[in-house]
Amino acid sequence: MIAGTAAGIYSFGLFSFKNGPLEVLTQKSITQKSVSVIASEPKPHYLPQKVLNKSLINAFNYIVTPTYDHSGQAVHPSVIDFKTEYGMEAWGNFRYWMALTPYPNFNSACENPSLLVSMDGINWVNPPGIKNPLAPKPFGILEKNYNSDPELVYDPGDNTLILYWREYSNNAFEKIWARKISPTHELSNKVLCFQKAWDFTKTGLVLSPTIWRKSAQEWYMWTTDSRFTMYLYTSKNGLTWSEGQPCSSPWDTWNGGYIPWHIAAKPNYPEQRIEFLIAGWPKRETINSCQLFYATAPMAQPKELSIPFERALIEPSSGPRWDNGYIYRSSFVIEHGNTTKLRIWYSACSKKKVWHIGYTEGTLDNKTFQRV
Image (tube, rainbow, N blue to C red; front, side, top):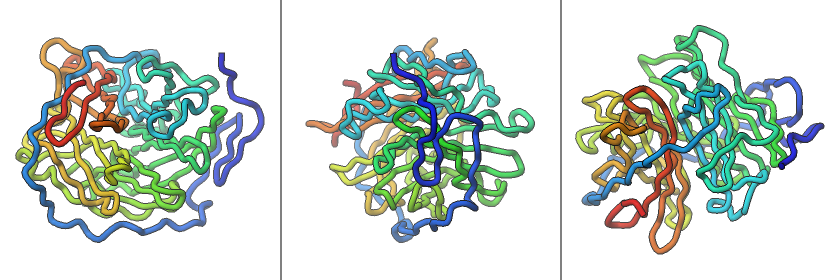
């Protein structure tokens, strides 16, 4: 049995880890300016002939995800495998950590950021000493005020996890918050990292933040705007962020054009590129046709995305399966060897509007992408 949260205070930087009522810090208390290190403006997208790939085999069953609302329905996975990604057998007594939100039958009131832990990536439990959710539903009318889109990032400099999530208030604002988690499972105050006034007609939304910590003073965040554009932001500390700059948009012409909706990014250091899993749908259709496709960008030019494959990686199942509705936000781990393997946790809904997370994996080389 693992001990629960230790008493007392665990401090680092702007965060104070302690037991007791949740306190809030805002950007006004942060003096360090964000960094602007984005490469030049995105160039016209060009790719050589695309590779004809095979889609992955869908997970036959979904994994069990305990949720604080007891529905077991979950979406928005963000997974860290400490052994594969950081060479650590475990962190905080577990190899795998996952951020997610419950989403029972599309109920946004339950869409609050939560954490699960695992030793094998398949069997998940609540982390000892941490009470889910880590942020309650915002005040306001249901469906117009809610949380969404968690992202989990490890900061080796601090030896802490950072949980980011989005808060949405219709006709008012969008915010991105952060809380840190210590190896002893203590939680920091929450910090307001980013805020945008509601301006859907002109600038769209700020959806699905995904973050790469390149170094202690060089952080990158990508978001989508609910239309055709992905934006890139930079930071010196992972807390205060620059204004977003548009990335190239290879999906605008890919297979007739797609709308990118939810995204996940991970660094591939041997290949010096960022890899993305993007949940999106054909622009002539609706979200009910959402599937998962793959993109990359050079680390030196993180706005220059390309799509090397002709087909999506994961499409909805046919027949009476748990994922026969549409595919949604996913997370992944890159494993290197003779071929590159992606291990993917993907969320999906059924046609009965039930949400779950499944696991699959496949090899990635210059010819095929298929189930191992």
